[in-house]
Length: 193
Length: 216
View 1 (tube, one colour):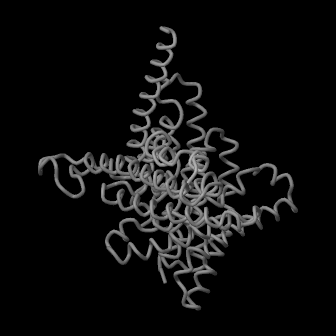
View 2: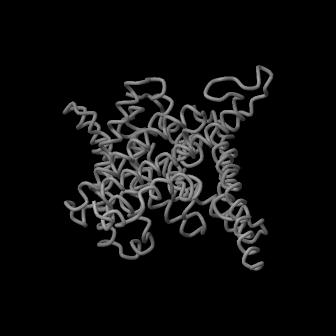
View 3: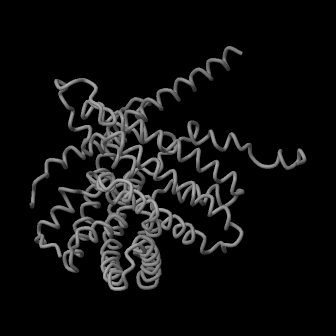
């Protein structure tokens, strides 16, 4: 059992080891939907929500597989459960709040293949976090993801107005900006530990 | 064998070669970015990750192609993911058996091959519609192209960041290491630089094509 304090877990997941800028998890949505501020915020909210749900699931699966003695099934169980959880959450939101469902749109199903979600499940298991620690870790990771996405979207909205050479337009420019953001986040190293 | 069966379908060599260059997954399609950036801080890590992905891609494409007529359309994605997850588990334990250090260096990113969009993308876009032999060739080409891309990134980052290649020192002890290149930002910068080179080439080719057309 890991004894790390909740505050340090939260800061670590959110800033120091930001999932996008330090672990390179969830790069696809990071590059894909960070064009507009509004969509970035929604995507971040959706990911945070799914992270919390799948964190609880992963904790349960891990405990169950430990009890049964089949750790080699972990990966398969994680991915299957996360995929079906996202599906369930999607149906639930559609039923209870159509407005929110429309707002999230295509992003909800896409989250299944977001490596940040599976990464979160694997990391929390590897680190041996308890139930509350896992929840805090998921919350921190989700907020960190949202923060990176929103920062990036803000920068890209400004960049649209700037004059850039044709060669750097598109992915290359986004990657350069992401690199600079990543350097900025390295300033948080050592915090909370 | 009649000529009709040979002519049928796409050319096998084309299917193999396209992944290496024309549709290179890293530089042209920009797929599967997470491992590309995360584990390419040294040449060796990049090579190991590339080979692991190649194995998973090859095996899962072949299996997906073999069962393509048995799986109902509604559950196909889930089936593919389960097939992929199975082979990733195999690779995970295999690397652990070969070298514990390597397994530690790659960490959770071996498991994360499951959600590499490249593999699911090939399963859905190619393997589910073609014969096992073609699917395997396509996977082999794409996998080698992916490994090549990872090596391009990994070797540049290791040479600049540590002054060595595959652990062999290149510039002697006086080399001032450019540490930022083996840290996360270096991944973004190196990939951006490679993409710039590719974009530049593409633009030059397009300009040359236009010039040739005007001359004709």
